[in-house]
Length: 229
Image: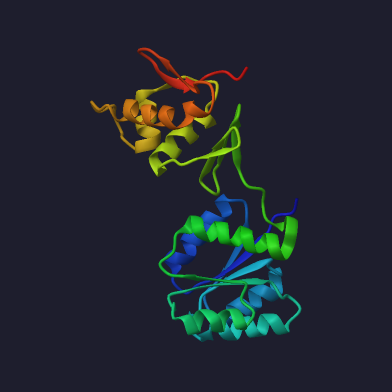
């Protein structure tokens, strides 16, 4: 499967860096540009599958860039990414040929999900495969932040999700309380806390009614996932 290429057109370096780091982490090839001229040059040079396009740029607007792209041979998918959130702006951007419209401030995970959705519509297999962890009848999707057990959705809080994800990334290990505090809660040392025990209990209450007990307690050591029969 080929890797999808995303061109990020954003004149704020901090935002451009966050988007580039996140998209590369999720398997995309990325390029950046900070103005209209740079965006059009990068599009000609790299033929991106998708352009994340800011509207207000130093030498013009994203509207102009979109028009040029639609008139050229590159013709990538376009997602506008801008602070302009008036209904007329959204409708105008879509009317120009935009495939989606995301307003600032944004959640980077939502941006990744929207990029994948647009690429599925416009480029089929160009979008990298989603990362799914599986243990027995439990499926955890690291890209959509969803969990299913025996085909049924399980609603987890962000902390519960991160705890289950760390357990599923280490299915053959018993993880100590200290490691879980460090990896899930970013605690540098094993503070006196019942937070791990509390959240293990939360997970059990949500997961165990849908199947056999999933999480094993090794007394005096830590927690792990039970072997799949």
